[in-house]
Each structure stands twice: as structure tokens, then as C-alpha cells.
Image (cartoon, rainbow, N blue to C red; front, side):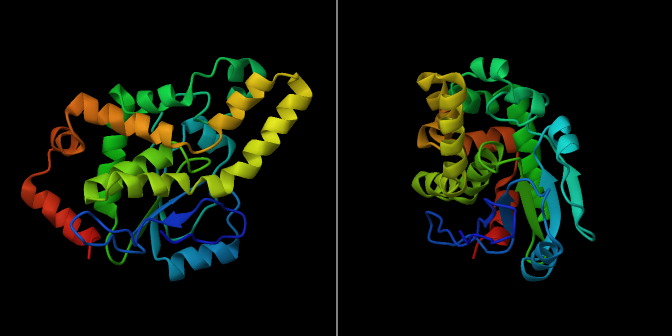
Length: 256
């Protein structure tokens, strides 16, 4: 899981290099996960295109998020807006309106938010997006998927992709937790700021907690899928409808 160092865009990494349970390895320079690309520099663009073979960007944010903080245009790279959420969700999406104190007070526990993201329409969106990611990427053309921070929506999608390719749960969780390298400072700053402004330790602690990547969050999503479908394998069979031949062909493309 190589970190890709860009000037201002953080939490950007290659999903390649991890081993599957059958001893194979996810190929590098095919699948990238990241955060908003609003501040991409020209040097970043050239690096992503030349060194990392980026050909497709999939934006997981809501329509409003993408309008408020549009990605930098990367000439020659395809851009697809494929929202995980159809509307704002306090704690997960980052529209300006959800950052008000009144909205933040109503934020449910993050574990519940993660459970909701693998239910109903949102799960259908994730399945559709994952199919697109797996169909777009190949040895010569890499795909990046991102949300705003690169932690929640991006984290769940990355977990599903790695699980499908045969990566074990512990490794999936380790990838998810890497986001803390980029979120800890902001989470602590917000915590201190809220203590000063609101004088409410419980509220400040709740918001700080939501800004971090916690194992209980991603476990809540994956445990829900295993409970609802019986296993991750059953989930992929029921929701993706791949034949054994199709599944093997996809895995051959992404594994070595």
C-alpha cells in the first residue's frame, strides 16, 4: 500500500502490494484511493499521469460537495461522478450546510452511519461503483476513486474491493486505519477549537472521534454485510451476479 506523495492532496495511496489469502498479490498502479482533488498542482497532474498511469477518476461525493469543491480538471483523464450518497449525511459528507453546530449535534454514532452505507440504495450505489472500478482498470490504465477526506465512503469501497480480490480482514482494516496519518491533526485541532467555542467536552470528543478512522467503524460495515448475506462471499455472489469464470477473469487481471 504505497502512499502517493502529492503537494496538497492527502490520504492518497495505491491499493497494490497487499497479499491475498491464497498467496497472490494485488498489482500496483491499477487501483488508487484518495481525497478531494481540488488542490492538485500541475506537477501532481503530470506525476499521476506519467508515473502512476492514471486514466480514470471516480468521484464518490454528493452532487453538492462536488459543486462546492470541484476536482481540478486533469486533461486526458476521464472523470465520472458516481455518488455513494444521494443526499447530505452529517459525519460522512462535507457540504457546507452539514458543518453547522445544529447539524453536528444531530449526528448519529459513526458506527450507525457505516451500517447505513451498506444498506438499501446506498449499498446498491456501492455495488454499481465497484463494478465500474473493476471494469475500468487494467494493466495500462489505473483508476482513482475518492470522496472528500478519503476515509468513510472511500474506505468502505476500498474494503469491498480488497475483500472481493481475496484480501483478509486484518489487512483490510490496516489499510483503512492508514487514513489516521492524515486525519489526526485536524481531528485534534477541531477538538480543541470546539472546547474553546462550545465549552462542551462530550460534544468536542464526539466530533473528534467521527473525524478519525476507527476499526469499529469499518467492522460495523463488514459485519453488517456478513450478517445480512451470511458471508462476504455470499454478498458478492448475490449482489454482483458474476459467474465463476467472470470472477476468475477479474481476479487474474488485478492479481499476480
